[in-house]
Length: 188
Image 1 (cartoon, helix red, strand yellow):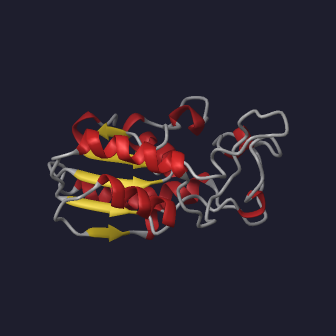
Image 2: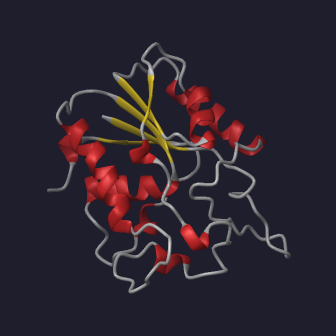
């Protein structure tokens, strides 16, 4: 089984617009720490995973994921840092809010957007799927993966298939909650 946990919230995730409405900033490779909200979210997940033994623990190198992993996992299995599950490079959209550009199009495989610096969904898919292909060689292992929202969307597409409308946001997961998937239930 794969236990995927998106990191807890940061100040950019909890960003509010001028009217006090939530308008998250895109933080791709910006290395921000968890905020108090994110720490509390991770503590709740730690309670839910308490006593769970993992054969492997794999974490993104970014601070928000590493902090989440440190809070939710207290076992003996060494934590592996893997660049393949770092968040998508938002390039020219880094630091913009979701309302400041076509965020939905950015996460839609059918979009005709061209990026100057940002990583394409296909590039993210290639590296995340590479890790999942490796893990699938030992499908009975219990693996904890602590990473990011974009990685989670792509990871779920590996198991459930690419959304028919190309919208990867339909797979967006909440902060610091475990989503469990199995290679045995993978749609072929």
